[in-house]
Length: 321
Ligand code: XMP
Image 1 (tube, rainbow, N blue to C red):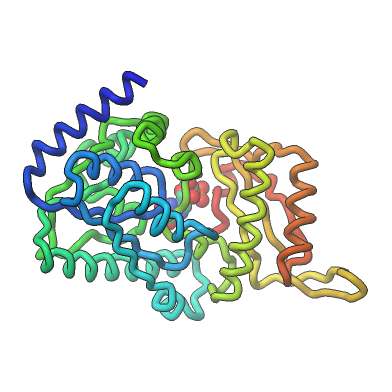
Image 2 (cartoon, rainbow, N blue to C red; image 1 turned 90 degrees about the horizontal axis):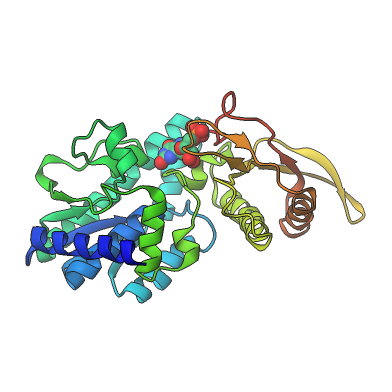
């Protein structure tokens, strides 16, 4: 596509001009924006770019592997993955309040990223930081350059004063659909480019109740089934987001095989939206819902009930926490 390759050429030239022979750092989240921004910078300055991927264990099944292995191999980018899932679980132990979860996840994220950034900066000297800021983010924050993404997605302040870098924001003039088109043009896989928006605190705010490894595994299994079936039905692009939520503190009676069960409910929350400010519940076909429900209750131990959230936003929010 001529327009997209022109945008890429223009950005590549601008990034080369800005960076020269200096070194660049980027935090990959697994989402579309940071993946495309990093790929674009890599096209421009190659191995002058180093990426950090903080694996907090709160992404969905397969997503960390997709960043660490598939994306890194495909692009050739030097991706340093830091596995801190144990540290996050310890910090989140006993916490049930949604805002408290957000605070802790944000704090642990920035701590981990800061430590990795410090190490890389000492090793090779870093001058620039890539941010996947989009045009709507720029407008929303009043047009100034910001430390936008890390801040807003993780609800924390940015890096400390002694660790400040100049920002590279190659997506600053673009809308989401343009970013997707550019991602495809750069050769990124469709599954990555078409990923639904996903909250920074991840599955941590999709477990109503305390977050434990067992509960995360259970939610990941249920979420993977819902996602796979939505995709198989060809409907993943007509749904804005599809949170799958575990009501970890609720139990209900069921019957499976020849026994009575006392398990947890899973909530399906497919929504359609333009900008996440308002949303409506998606009218997914009954056949698809039936299939998801049957598979989850058959395949995920301890889940004996699947319910559908039929609330619009407002009054409900998209996420349950
Ligand atoms: P709600 O639940 O408020 O969500 O309707 C609106 C949009 O924001 C996402 N969301 C978050 N994103 N950090 C994020 O980066 C958060 O703490 C957070 N909470 C909600 C949500 O997935 C939806 O796209």
